[in-house]
Image: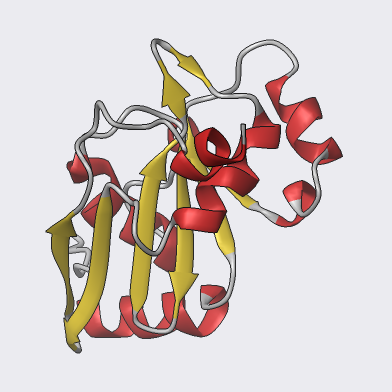
Length: 151
């Protein structure tokens, strides 16, 4: 008799995800070049960012955070890494690349300063079992304006 795996219940996965990660920050990536991770850990708050490596996701029995990344973050088709601000019922997503390379980790704070108005995607829980995606700034637009205004 074949064993059938049940699909994750979307409402339960979202409840568990927001219970655990609301108020936190995620860096979703496919590995880091050079000493990027070391530099991230030196930054204010950098050691507190949850790092989700796409290469190590459990795609058969995903945890709530893995399920959210697979179901909602990956389909955004943004360059990796991405920074995700998790609020109660909302995700704000911005990629962390310039050209073909990740920005220096010290720049993350510039992105964080303006994430409310300058994000690539806002995912909002409109129903108990799904997140609705609203696109923000174009993928090509990734210069932090707060940094440019301070120069």
